[in-house]
Image (cartoon, rainbow, N blue to C red; front, side, top):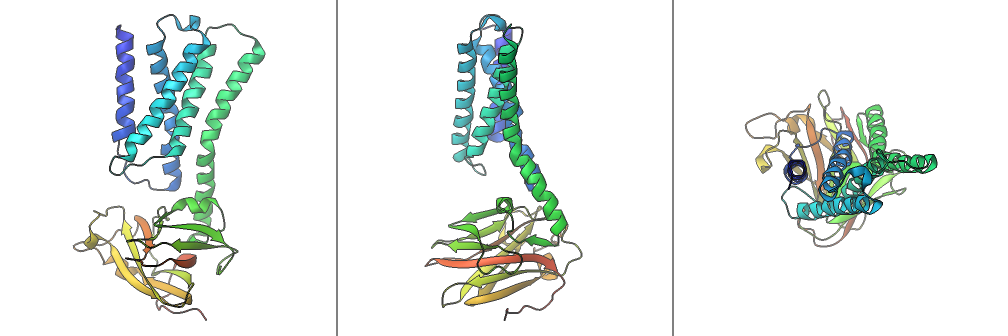
Length: 318
């Protein structure tokens, strides 16, 4: 094994460490999270380069197309394997989209590398370069969508959620249930979030990327329409980016939704004082979670008009 191959294998090992063990902390916004995800593209350009170097024992310009196809296939297999491993690691998860970004990076590299110092018809060169560019642009689509959503969120603030666009749903994570936009029981705009809770320990929905700075506001309020004939206790959890994952270090309060239309109002001064031994950093709010505990039967709740404001007293919609 020559020196250059050893260097290539070392770089591949570094890529493994980045994929499996790098902890960048909680992203400050969905846009930043999308940019981190896009990082798979340049990372797998490096992976494909290393794999190609290991496979290619001759001068690269003399290698045939088969070697480049093998480099792409091995890189893609490496990406898929890393996602499978992450499924079994704490605080990591399997992401099909990451495999797509891995493929885009590896494909872009091998298409450009194959042309290097190799004569070929101009039309073929343009087609291969165009395909490489399209692969990268496809991986950039979620970044562009997240940027547009970020601009919309800044424009709508202090409205945190109204579910008027499909991409807004990317900010929400649903566990032990499912959710979709619905034109039923909307109180702000045309759509509400139809949240279908299944029997489980903590079924609910989390706003994972709210605007972070809540300073100067007195309340968090949202509208909730509960289907059925019996009340439903739901708990609201709020924590900041400094949260240590302990129950005493966050805001947790249970509200009882009555059948029909409800308006829940939360005092943010109470939220700020909730962590034991410190004040919650209202300028760095990390998430808002609405969940039921030990739910025994399926329930459906429609959420809308999640916003910060100055309303001090809770009430029920007429």
